[in-house]
Image (cartoon, rainbow, N blue to C red; front, side, top):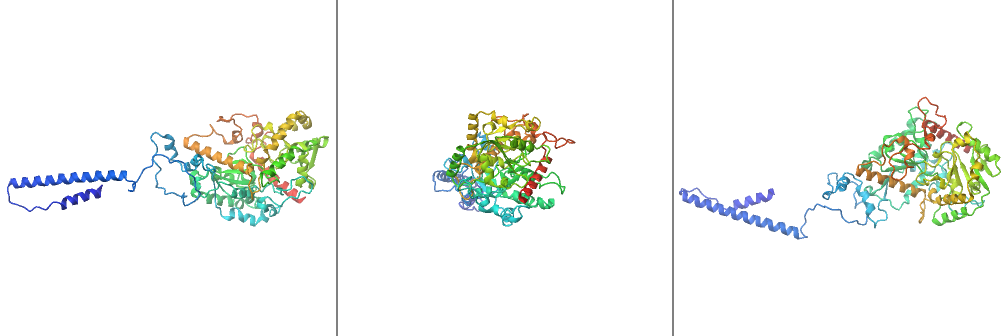
Length: 596
């Protein structure tokens, strides 16, 4: 308005001739005043008329540019992944669109930068709506450089051959007819880091625009990193890469959106390798999962902690990595039609140094049963480490015994289910509280649970317990196990399944669902649970729909942590200290296996 007023003033001054002083009387002066007044009124009238004219013209003529305030969201449109179309970092001073009147949801959503990502799910024409993943482009030292220096990834195992074929390892020959002709590899049980990252490269809904991402993947080979330094290195060396990674991530603009709560990474090792409790040099592992920034992220591990909320269990890799659906269907059908002559079987070694282990009693029962099969893994028996021997035994068994190993979980559980063998668990932490994304909540539909104390204290007969299950029920349970196979295996990263979802797909969907729920709760100003207690983390995935608080549970004794001054090896206690020792023992077992 200032220029227009100035122009009007200039026009008024230029349109009236200056008057010279005169010596006429009052009559002349009054006449001049009237002239000035008439001219001023006339100019003011024409100025108003012109302003009105151009304002109307501008509002009706589409060829005249004008500034608009968008009051309502636009209809959904097809989303392009071009980075230049959706800039990663819009100007910070750009104001959000004005909300609709009385629209509380719109007002709330404007406070969060991730709303745009949430809205992609509303676009029904976009098959990736609500599914986009943004992958950080990490420096090579966090991943690829480790593979180039693969001989250092394990103290006792040459991991170079196991990182071939996109992490699947060398192909297995089907000499004994145990496997199918394609899709079988000598996969290392700790190779999930590279397998998962290579599967992510084939994910259909990757985006270079982080503002669209439903979740953000960090391709750090955390398991390979710690494997290099667990023995004979100080804590500074063990922690170095984790600290550098967190520092790198926190400087990225993507981190600022949710302070890392939309980030996830994968480690193909048990959680205790990343949960060092102190700064003592003789303490185990690194402290990655105890870093404040890492507590915001989600870490997928082959064994998670029941008392922490920032890690989630995903399956150990098996030997089967199909490249297409038909390979899975053929394998499932073959497992349905096998003649299983053994009631139960066990592959493993005793743990004489662990007073809580029931393995010795299980081995004795297998030896003394006419319907039990034992494949001993101690005393240098190489068959236990041959994939064909293990799978052959599982394929001939109705039930496969899966007691705790050096820690809660075992790769053997997934090998047995791949063979269509019904798993028998003795601790809920071996599967039921671990793999809640991949296994049904109702564990009785696919497995048998025998509490450890029934074996340890009461010396229950496993044979008698299993014979109590009606044959028809056994058939139903076996079929349920066979149906679970696709979601428990990792498909070949160099191809993709057509319709089936593998363990990778299930995990990514679960992470996206987790982040999406968190974002919606943040907008609504609510939490997912009432009175959340992190030490009870294992309980929350077991809650029924609609439940918002975890109370007492029948499995509480299995997860009670030692109290100050209490012996951590006493019955019922499974504290972090004892689990860290278990992690160390698992490495000793690996050393023993490779030496044999």
